[in-house]
Image 1 (cartoon, rainbow, N blue to C red):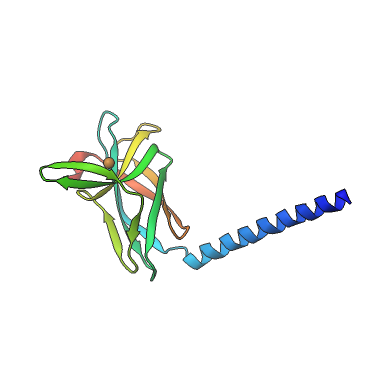
Image 2: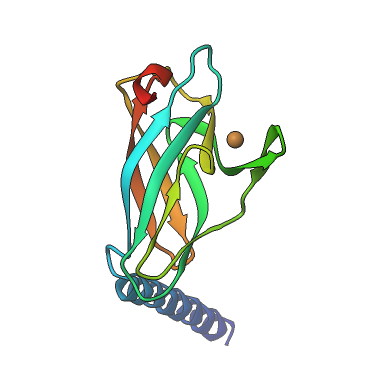
Length: 156
Ligand SMILES: [Cu+2]
């Protein structure tokens, strides 16, 4: 009797895991491989281990808005979406939880507006390098995006 209960429970857990993985596969399929694409991805590098800023334009090919909800990097310990806000003559940065890419539209993470603050480099990063950011979206899609590292002089 005890044996039967255990077997049944095992089977139940297994069925649950199977359903979950099937649901995951079908949602990834529904989203399509290329709902969001990234273009013009680059990093403004600063010397002396100062935080760098990542910039990219995100294009949404679908008919639904999609939010950028998380950013991580294998090259930096910390990657956060910030917005530069002007306050008269002064500027400050605020954290941004999510950024909406409009349906059939695009959003630019660009100087003067949004930037991806990149801190705590895991290894030496220099102009000419390529770093990778993983962008995660509200539809479950992730985008591994190469960013070209540029010196401040190259971006003027
Ligand atoms: Cu910042």
